[in-house]
Image (tube, rainbow over all chains, first blue to last red; front, side, top):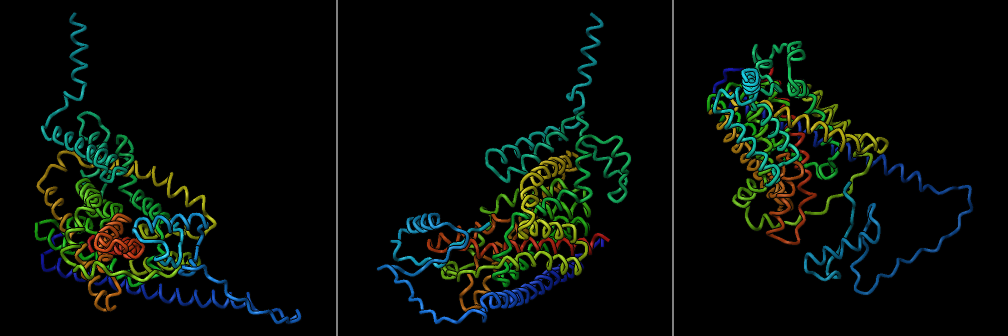
Length: 114
Length: 394
């Protein structure tokens, strides 16, 4: 393949683009399958963890009332490996950068990217 | 007095000035100083460019004897006389062994893997399409390099500059066209540093204001188990499909496994910091040493610099175009700007997507969405390099 013509190089280019796409599309499919399988396995594991213990007498637990939100609150924010103080600081910085009052923003979750 | 005169004349004959035989050596020394300026003052990929420029400086100082190109290219790249290298080689000849044997690029990839979070890509696997599309530049440059008269193996080495991945470019070039290693490495790293200048005009030209303002949905959290299984699965799959890519992709995924598995924190830390820094020094200085005046100051170098720019531009175009297709297919849920991050250059290209997106809509945060195509681009460029090696390396 040392002395290659332009037409041959076009063929190699088309084949090369196809190979990259095929490999990454198959990988994409494999990741999707992996995600589903792992989600199911983890879901099953969690269900097994919360299975009620039949040896203990069943006591009817009163349904916990959801905590009342503070006035003007937009709801809760999920924190993943982020201390409360850091989360508060991040939300304040974002509000300041966007020039938007904090109570007009809705934070869904804050996660530390490691 | 005659005795003193003899001593002075002997000393003068042994200085480097006596070995200046070609004005191109002076040009290369000046060029090395310009690159040092760009690395130190302008901060263009300084961690590598400073080492590369200094290697270039050392190798072009006459009489230094730190690097001997004739040991590597005398009898063709495939037939290196290893015992001569060990016996007669200078310091940089010995360090260059790590490049020639493909050790440094693979170890750099291990460090990159240990510093990379594949979570955004796993949360949105469709972003892999953007990483694949951005390899378009590689193949455009391949055809153009052949049209400009380069041999197949040389064209493939030049084309991989479009992968925007320095270690991959070095890894492929050291096998296919080692005599072009200096210009290709310098072009690859220079353009990676210039991504914030190269990409935005293309991004603005190919997207509408409405497309650039698209806010994307938040990515789902990815579990630790998924992150641990991912590098193992990718290694098995990709190395079975393209075995030639095993050193690069295997090391990338091993580094990532060190990071994610949670039981090798010490190794992950070493790979990310100490090992990465040591290999970066060796890689930079030995790659720079290959840029000797007789190898570098050629018309081919100018062609490589131009082809590298074309490769980068078309890589950006490829990612953006597929981004626009995904925008249309998903009914406007994907911001096409994240497509430009498909050129690997982690995380610079993703930052450019974020910056351009936020200019159009200050409340838009594209960074994590752009990291998906960005890390997919690393895998994509490794696959493209593996393909080119399989085709032209035989």
